[in-house]
Length: 489
Image (cartoon, rainbow, N blue to C red; front, top):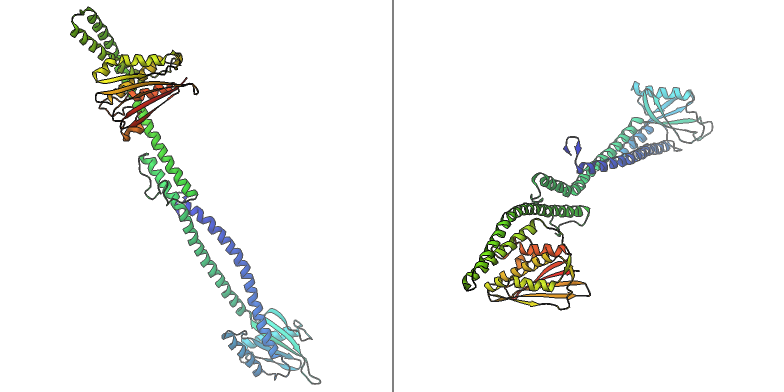
């Protein structure tokens, strides 16, 4: 089976060596069996004809051409019935007496064989004086014969020595050998066909999953990672997957594809964030300078207003608060677009927490939210932190808690010192409805929020915590949510 020009498939690569080895073993075994069986055929025929000769030379047997023909005919009929024996011709030579033979004297070609035997005997080819049966293979009258011969002396005084010859056509032996050889070859061919079928079944059983893996890999390489995997591939953790190397390969392939898909998703997400960061930096630069001018102008107008005009002063304060809120948003955009490493300096976290609530006091009052502090007096006032980044982190967490409540809620800002671990824990709790279950796993991702707008605050808080080597987490219940930041110092 060829899968391409000059390239064999896996099933072929598995089957061919299997067949080659089986064929080699079959040839070696066939040669050994053939030699043994062919030799046994010749030995069997020889033993059969030796028995026939023993019968013909039995003492007291009435020797004559008719009696010899009867023995030969009975042996031939026995051979046809499956009993050991076969058609043979007899020749008996005795000095001074014409030869006795089962060959027909009327058949010149047959009698020429007798004459050739007599001539060879006179030449001393089969000279013998004992009763041992010997064998020879020779050509008489251009025909190959198996020749068994012996000598017998009849009973009675003055009896002359008789030499008995049994001639069996060697072509019959070769014919029997050829039939045995054909059976061996036929069985070998049948065995080779069965081995080929078995080899192909095993090869396809092994290569089937590999072919499906290759097809899935080709489809993914041409169509992208979003292409579905082969429908016949077992899913990860499925009971249909085999507990073998092929099963391990399938699992590794599927794991690799899933990992690549996740990496591709993360890469696309990073590219989108990079583009968003560039856009955010551009927008922030365009907004920051006008905001600074607006704040300076409002502050100047506020200073010129009289203390008696309380309503005007209140309006200026609200405008300044909104400008500060916009400035904070711009700072968040810049922090997201161009993160910088923390500039550590001795920092009083308790003071930062109090200043944060005071900074956001007007905004919390406007939302009818009460701010509460629970500060740990044992907290050192000189922790090596970036004060500006920690302040931004606290502002983001407090605003997130305030926006999670409709009105009449409480935001609690706590600090806690853990001297045994040399770390400070800062938590912000609210009395809102808690965080929905479907977004808890991606709460700190960009642009993930339960509000219609927003999505940067928690992501930036996580970024600041990680920049300081810390962690941030969330505990939620129907009675509210608590975000805790742990910073090692």
